[in-house]
Length: 387
Image 1 (spheres, rainbow, N blue to C red):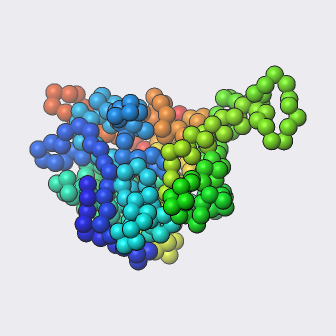
Image 2 (image 1 turned 180 degrees about the vertical axis):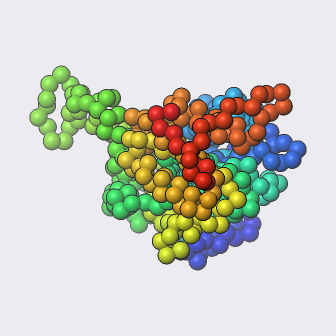
Image 3 (image 1 turned 90 degrees about the vertical axis):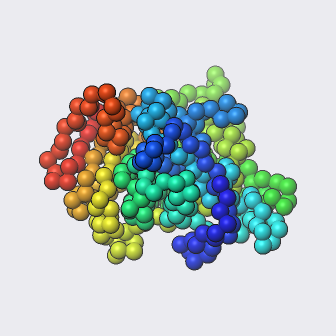
């Protein structure tokens, strides 16, 4: 979908005419009240569910679809690719109308708030005045939270999974190391590598390897790889692959470098760094969340997620409770680390299904689901662990 009206950005810059790639699933009801926006994380896209033309499944296909926790027989689901990405929406790989060459490093810095504003324009263009819910995991969860703060009248429910109110210093550090790997690649050419006919694959490989380590828990890596060797015996080499975990990381890096754009990686990790709604309220997250008093929230975290640890979700829960906002919280004991939000887990999906039943209300002829046990907090916090 193309937009001729420029998009003002938080930095003070402006993104001129641009396009957003999107997909929809299910049917918008007559009241236009059953729309759910799904926000993508770092390396995902608008292709949320089902198979694309190449036969690739959507990145959240186990959660979204007919009869699934986010049931497209009841909801109209929208997946949008954010500006600055490399999967169809206007980004660094596209031509800059002012210069006649690819944007490259000249593409303006975008933030979570800018993405939400762009999404809001698309939702409005689709004729939807208010979303039933906004859903996202990780960076997508930050976008879901930002929707309630920037466009509070245009969404009823917020579902934020494996996310945080801002990045810790350690997370910013991981992002910086990954960015430096890309920027110092000789093929990067200051971000204008397209004109040189090359790609900074070496930097992208290292960036992906660093990121992938943070997405997995120590237990998951130990269970899957341990200290298993690639060959029968040690090779006593400092440069060749010795352990299976090394082989796995190199495979992930190689694959990533073939389809992801280096400038997009820089933009998206910086948007992660910048997200901090409390910053404009003297560091007080509760004050930042006060505008969301009319919303209902579900926060989900995973016990072994050390990148966006459960304590970070609980910070958001506390800020909402301080405002007496209706919030449910599920903490799932899962061994997979940050990637758990993308994986099949019956307990996690049961929580999601129950909450979307709440969003939709019982369909005609269907019995009302049993209400989950409620906690003692006045705001209605549902604490779920080992669900």
